[in-house]
Amino acid sequence: MMSGLAATRYPNNRAYHPVSPSFAMTAHLSRITRTQSGFTLIELIVVIVILGILAATALPRFADLGSDARRATVRAASGALATTSATAHGKALVAGSLTADVDMDGTTVAMVNGYPSSAATTATAAGLSSDDWTITVNGRDLHVSPNGAPNAANCRATYSEAVSNAGVLTPAAVAVVDTGC
Image 1 (cartoon, rainbow, N blue to C red):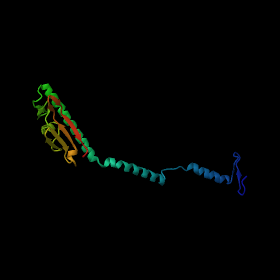
Image 2: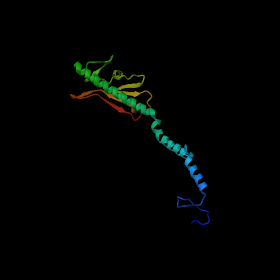
Image 3: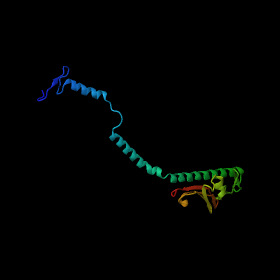
Image 4: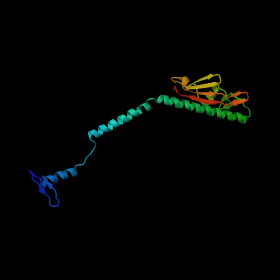
């Protein structure tokens, strides 16, 4: 028995409660009928802080979309040049002449050793126009870089024409440099 407090013994419960039955029942009913709705202020602040942390970690990935777009554009130009080279090479093989010019959808492409030359018409046949691209020819190399690239020498696709040296044919190749995009 508890000392100093008036205790009530309930008939079906062996425990003694230091409060009256009416007060205990009222407190119990108020806990049953009251349900929590919504978030507490602390929960809301925690969620906002977590979202802020996630946004701060994701921001650098999306902040420089321009360079990602230029890289993708250079890779697409590389694919267009490689496809044009392979198609023109196939046409030359079918025609039976590795040096005759090939018509690529209305663009005449000069052939060297069975592959397109590094002339600007190869870029035109690949669908690359000077409106969007800076096209330069340097010896046996055709350089294509997107207009507005911060460093055109390090943001370009380079088509190298086929070379025959002592009877050994090195086919045309396309290389991509995208470190300066």
